[in-house]
Length: 227
Image 1: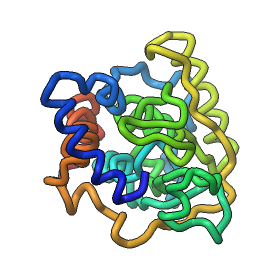
Image 2: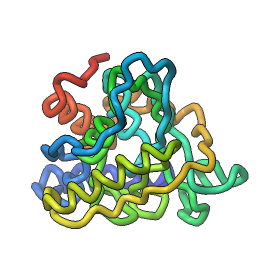
Image 3: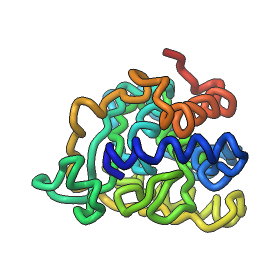
Image 4: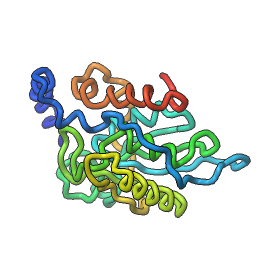
């Protein structure tokens, strides 16, 4: 959704919420208690250096806000993945025709937080992994659920966790998250960075994204990092 359309939808969203009809949107990031991954990356004790992975799950404002509050995450950057460099621009990505997904590149210290733990956060509070090409009030392929892995071990852990969660039937439907190799990541425009943190009173943030951070704090107290 473009910025103008997103703003135009806000009054409708607020009315729906006030009227008790917001159930359809509230499922994204509601905070689903999940089992820990049976298969995870190996303990990183003594292993130097940071790792990266790219997560896509709806509007990047909320996904970035969640990962910015996870201990062990050194940086979370909003951007685009899945398409070409020439189309990595918000107005173009918002058409849904570029192949890009709104994404967040997460740089983390595997000695402090494992990739499996990041996946658990991603599936539990950052978005609803059963929604196909939509999250909350936003629709289109640019809002799809995807993991762009940067290492074979990330692919192994992610595929195993999706199978584990599907077998456990913890969600109302099957997980539709794409697990694909990262070809390139393009940072989004400056005004998109840290958007939730800088605009906490924006109705879109208050309704769709602030609850995700609250659920992170509640469900992952040992991983939660305050401002």
